[in-house]
Amino acid sequence: MVWNGVHFNLNTIMPWYVIFIWTLLYFALLAWAWRPREGKPFGNFKTIDFVYIALIAALLIVYNFFISPLIPKVGTVTTYFYYPIIGEMFLVMLAASLVGKPGSAGLVIFTYTLLSDIIHYGFGGEPFWFLYEVTSYAAIIDIWLIYRGKYYLMPFKGIFKSSADYKATEDGSIASEELEEELKPARLLFIVDAILGGVTISIAYPFWWRGFWGPFVLGISFTPSFWFITTITSIGAGVVLGLVVAPFIYYIKKVLA
Image (cartoon, rainbow, N blue to C red; front, side):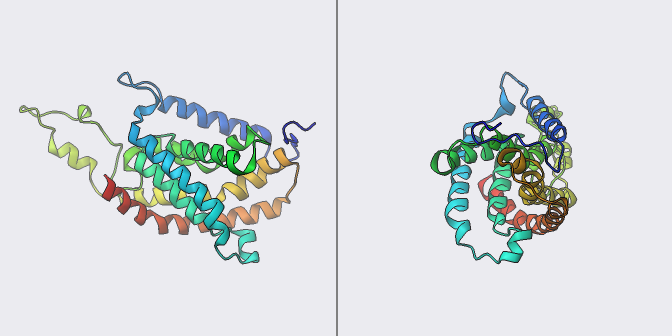
């Protein structure tokens, strides 16, 4: 049976129920993070957050369709690791850092997928490409943002607090020692931010697409050994590239903050 270009092939390396559970877990955690607080729904997104999301989604279109294809490709290298992914990695991690709210990476990827379907791919295979892109390229970053929040890719600790969360002194000012505690250096968390972001985006295609979504939607198949080797290679590359782009994102965020 084929519907809208989808073959529904379940002869995949990863079982369908693993993908189903992962997708449910992601959206459940996102719904919890977006629960109304102080009368504001959707995790307190502001207008500037949506501006960043729309702008970076548009830059992703420009990069993936016009810049990335021009980057020299060495066949044996890009077979196992597609190094032009560094541009997409930089942009998605930048969006997550600037917005600093769970769901920001997913919204960028969702907007990018919608625009790419409109201008290039068409809507064959949907809605499954939306699920693939969001749960593969953004989910881990969004889940990590539930903890890190506005401190994502900043070398400080803890969850970013509002002034209402701090104890006030007698004159009504915020207790400086509490604020200093939040701003203590946390270089290890900064490194974790970079590695999680880099690995998430680097392995999205070899691990999730080759392991399930490509065979499920298009009916193609890959050998488990090729899937495993390319995934391991991409994990190592993701660690390196994540650490490379992280300092640049931090300085951009520092300038814009």
